[in-house]
Image 1 (tube, one colour):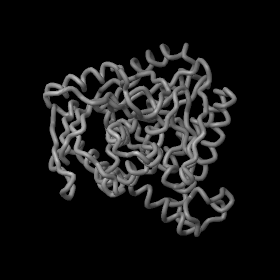
Image 2 (image 1 turned 60 degrees about the horizontal axis):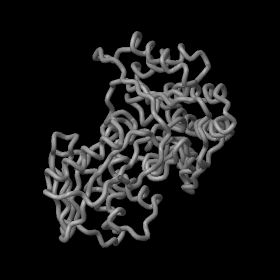
Image 3 (image 1 turned 180 degrees about the vertical axis):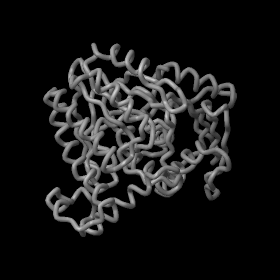
Length: 386
């Protein structure tokens, strides 16, 4: 669904629910990570791009301190809370925890927030590894920016508050990548992010290259998966080597390690992935799709064998796409792991052949066909102007 269509849907629902027209409409995109998995919370490098799938919020400032929310994609579920009262976890509405957690972080930053009425919709697939949660949280922050409530808060600060909300309120110890690229993405570019300094560098995608995402239809939930266990293993490895984060570890240090074999494999993935990600940014800048394809293949193998976050269905999907591309494009799992999506960079003229092969040759464990869609690298969060 286009952002224009999402806006029409959100605004129409707003008028129906609240009896007036919205004051503004904002969007925050999902993202796909081209390479650099589980490196962000290790202080390393990632190379995502924002995509043309987004959370859209129609909103109006209130005169009181109430926040009222209508979630159109959750069967019209509603949530309401008071900014002058402690913000508690919602009962039976997981989506509302992301909204409340973000608002709690805004309040914790000593910002004078007004009440808001909001209707929320979007087309970022949930549970697919495309950061629907970060998109929602950044969109909520952008909604408060739209009514002038965050006069000195820049997009990076919004991203940091969204990360803290997911870490502390929701309970997923994610890094900064998802929120930062949702807040700061650039159209037509990937974003090389140094997750320690938060410095970013826009890297143009080569002309004629498509970004294809295939959803394995294996749903994933980071809070309930082994994501937090992987992070704990990385932190244990960093302590073993006496470094602040695995970003500071070298391949030579790993080679002489007495670390237990399992934790060593976890650390090896992060160290090698950081190197791959920086080389991938150079390859894209040069338009070298063959080099990028090789790096994506190495990344997937590392996630499969060392970090052990892929699942058999996702491996099959990567193999199907890789066989069609034959080195003329790259493919790998993307996201936190344990299901979700794969991403491919490929010549635009090969999209049809890949879609056909995936339709013919892939089914999830439940017999479902993959959902395939082609995305554009898009701009980060901001207002949707008429």
